[in-house]
Amino acid sequence: MGKKRFIKRSLIGLFMWAACYSANAQVFDAVVAKDGTGNFSTIQDAINSVPKNNSKPYLILVKNGEYNELVEIPDNRPFIHLIGQDPQKTIIKHTIHCGGEDDVFFRYSTNNSSSPNYKKHCVFDAGAPNFYTENITYQNTYGVSRQTGPQALAIRSMGDRQAFYNCRFRSFQDTWFTANDDHVRQYIKNCWIEGAVDYLYGGGNVLVENSTFYNVRSGSVITAPSHVNAEYGYVFRDCVVDGNTQAANGHQKLGRPWHNNSITVYINTTMRIPIAPEGWSDMGTIPRLFAEYNSKDKDGNLIDLSKRKSNYTFTQKNKSETGEVTEEKITGSCRTSITKEEADRYTYENMISSSDGWNPRLYMEEMPATKTIKISKSGLLRWEPVAGAIGYLIINSNEKIVAISSKCMAKIATPDQSYTIRAVSQYGHLGTPETIHVK
Image 1 (tube, helix red, strand yellow):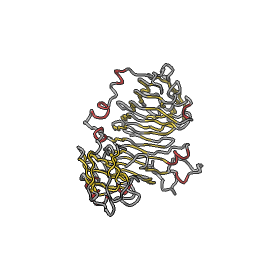
Image 2 (image 1 turned 180 degrees about the vertical axis):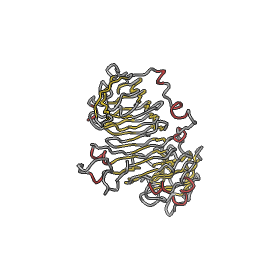
Image 3 (image 1 turned 90 degrees about the horizontal axis):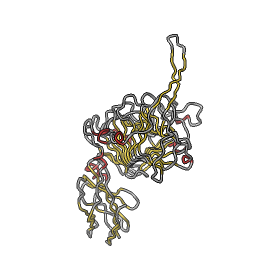
Image 4 (image 1 turned 30 degrees about the vertical axis):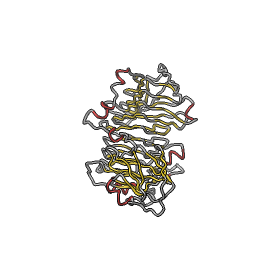
């Protein structure tokens, strides 16, 4: 929270200047709230309201709450900006997995024709391009609660030009499946990605910056890429590898090659927990590039990469014209490190913006706190406008959004509590909070 200011004013008998509902349309295109104070009570209903083939940011605010639902953004709903109130308290969750009939939790399986999860993929399925989200937890409750497999996706992100900021992604096995098209670009910043088995996997050119990979068991494996002809693949810059007590025993792996020409590069990574000396594992192919640059331990010391795995082996099954299946052992190698000059090529400008100028960092630009907050004798809050703001959230000390205003004013109703004001950008980003206390 921002700096507190104390203002004495009697507020007895005051009423709300404008209800949230009447002001929402001026700032957000839709508001989702479990308590009925928004336009919708479910996220899927809000997404269904978005015009098909939309061509500009459609702002959806999700108020704090646990939204237990399967959510899908189809290809024909581009430019959705899904904005949560608080990443710790705005949670999209569901229990879903890909197990078989022998699993005691088969009722949650995507393979169970009697389950509402039948033929679904994950908790949150983002297929449309130009999707942006911030301040939301995406959670597969099966993975988080059971701490075991099988595959239990929290999110599947298939669209080009997708960006994720200040979000949390939680499961155990296969938390996040990225694009199966290597021309797709996705940008992830200031996020928390949690799991144990291949918990960021798939394809595309995916740049992750200033984020935490959190391991939840001994022997966790972070990535399992399956790039075919990606120019950059998975690139993690200025990130942290961390984990719980079980994961801090030195058996963790940075990744393993799932299919085709897998690429994963760690640049300027801080390993807060020890990684296995070999760093990487075998899987289903020979990686094109599994490498690091400037990896450091929790104390800031450079990590010795001399024991990192460079030789890989996998078994390939071959089927003859007569139908006979034989197995062939394939071996190969790749480098374990890259130079500074090479690391400098894996940049935001090259990976994300170069082809068409797409710049999702604009969505995430910090907005300053409101200034010179004043209150009139009638209980009307006023403040100076924030440059670039299209509106403001007014949040009480119970973390309830009591007003959404397109103006630099709002009337409050309850005395003797704090009120926090946050500016809203044209992309839906929530600015730095400023809090006052009214007596």
